[in-house]
Length: 245
Ligand code: NAP
Image (cartoon, rainbow, N blue to C red):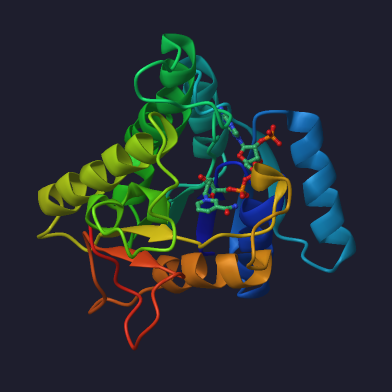
């Protein structure tokens, strides 16, 4: 059976990604920092006919929780096919570079960057046992330094001292890890789901969770000849989803 772990899967984009992969026949470990919320989400999917789902407690910002999740999952499966590092936080909208509080900066990086790295490292052994391991790091258009340097970009004014930079760091990690594993079957990509209506932005986003999950699933299921070490976005108009770094 093909298996996937999604962090922050108890709601929003992570939950919809879980649903779409369960619909494709994957066994989905629904990562949730609150196990009760994860179990409620798993029950919701089971009620909708997706029986191959299980909640796993994982707070990506807590290395002990990540290690415990790895132990739990390792007892049930011998290989992991897909890891989706989806859990993320904005850290509020007061992120002036000259004045941001170090606490906010650390909290955002602990979740969006260090969290994703810890989870990736913890599950690397199981991923290496898959015949076709895939990692999707859920990033943001706000990670793009090229777009942030273009005054014509529609989100040019949306600068942040913590959130954007934490995703830029995640992009850099994606490139480095993909390079390290370039001669293996791994495909590791950074994917921006686009500005999506979720709790993350008080539902001001313009896209749907269905469409956001679609691009994450697309790169989670990329084939043996698919890309690795690339950055894709739902917000790019054109034939390719590829985003400038
Ligand atoms: P969301 O509605 O706020 O959901 C975020 C999920 O991450 C929730 O399940 C949340 O759990 C979980 N989470 C947060 N911190 C965590 C931690 N320390 N450990 C484990 N789980 C944690 O956000 P979303 O819109 O679905 O965003 C999902 C991803 O897409 C994020 O990485 C975000 O940066 C990215 N993204 C979103 C947008 C957008 O417009 N929505 C655009 C670009 C990129 P709780 O329920 O316990 O809080």
